[in-house]
Image 1: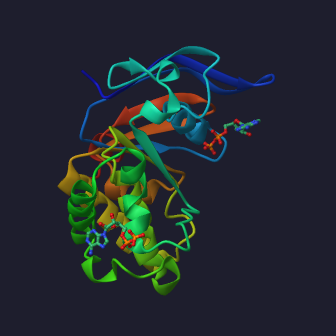
Image 2: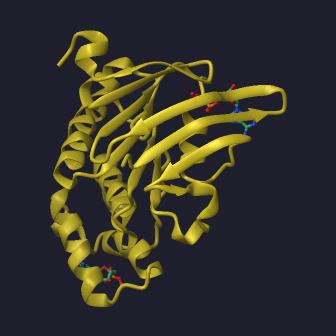
Length: 225
Ligand code: ADP
Ligand code: ADP
């Protein structure tokens, strides 16, 4: 069973069709990238999958369940944006623990999970620091761990690297891919940058004008491994 499924999904804003008859099926544990020019409907697709917006027609299934029928606090999906805004007055550990506290995990469970995530990005020594005391790359890692903490079925990433300088961006691409592989989570990443898509993806979904043009692995699409 696919972890994500779009069945004939259409979304319009007034007369403007942002996403048109989208059909997409995604296997669990893959790094999937929606690639296409600005305005082609990538973010809209991601926001609908996250349950932040309703399709006009069609159906979106996450883990086999219709996302529009799952109440917001039960949705097993998380999103990371470019302006990942950590809670500035909370420690790194507290930022990561936040979603776990909401879920009602006990202190011991939270501590174990936070340790595991800090270790994953080698920030064990930064647990008590405030976001303002971290570098840009470290903050981004914390934002990722905060989003991964509650173990979502899918992690949605809406151009999370686009504000970074070229060097850090390249480094974070490699790290993101490595985190995805280590955790085995399904990542759905959005970018307009083909190079970025090629570096990280198992599957690239090429979109244009609200539709899927092509879909496949980087090698099949662009002759790159
Ligand atoms: P992308 O992520 O590929 O840049 P979007 O999904 O953000 O594209 O947008 C797809 C189209 O829908 C664009 O033409 C955009 O202007 C339009 N659109 C997106 N969100 C809204 C909105 N909230 N209101 C009106 N139009 C929107
Ligand atoms: P507070 O004092 O408000 O609880 P802390 O930053 O001490 O804030 O901790 C927030 C959460 O993160 C707590 O659930 C705590 O168990 C956990 N935590 C704190 N430090 C660590 C750490 N080094 N490793 C793992 N979990 C931690």
